[in-house]
Length: 291
Image (tube, rainbow, N blue to C red; front, side, top):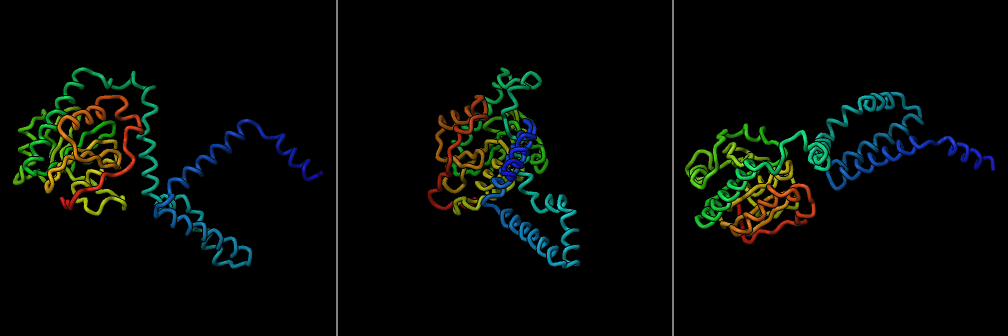
C-alpha cells in the first residue's frame, strides 16, 4: 500500500505542462526513430547504443581509463551526432521547410499564386515545354527541364549559365541541340522564364530505383527528392516523356496529358500541397535507357 501511495502522490504532482512536455519529447523520439528507420543511420544508432552499454559496464566494474575515454566521447555527443547524422538531420530540416501547412497563414505577406501575369507566364512556359517535349520525343533528343516551385534552386543554377529569358520552342531547341555547349545539363524554369541552363543536378540516393534508369532520369529524381521541383525528362534513347515529382517518376505522357499534369502541379493550389496527388510507386522503364 505504501508503494501505491507513493505512486499516487507522484501523479498528484503532475500538471498539464508536464504532460505536454512528456508528449513533446515522445514525439521527438518517435520522429527520430522514424527518420533513421531503414537507413544507414539505423546501424550508426545501434553503434551509439552499444557504446553507451559499454560505458555503463565499464563504470560498474571500475574500468577507469575506458570510462574516462567514453565519458569524453559522450561529452562531445552533440557535435559527434551532428557530424555522424548530418544527412539525416539535413533531410529532416528540408522536410520541415517543405511543409506547406503554414503558408495559408502568411499569404498576405507573399506573392499571390493566382497573380494574372505570373499565371500567364507559367502557362506559356508549360505549353512551350510540352510542344518541345513532343518534338524531342519524335527526334529522340534528350532534355531535362526543372520547373522551380516554392524552394529556390539558385545553388543549382549557379552550376550552369544564367539566361533569364522568355521561354520558346526555338530557345529550348537551341539549348538541347546535341552539339550545343549547354545541352548536357538541366534547364531551370522560374516563374515562367528560362532562368538557367546547363545546370548540374544531384543524383538520387534511392537504391530501389529501376536499374535501367540512366543518369538523366536519376538526376531528375534526385532534384525532385531534395526540393519540390517538377522535372520534365525526355529520353534520348526511347523518346519517352516523363515527369519526376517528389522522388517518383511518371512516364509515357502525351502532349495534352503533360500540359494537364504540369498545370495541376504548377498552377493549382492542390498541385503542390496535396500529397494524395502523387502516385505511390515508380513506373518501370520498358527497355534499357542509360542517358
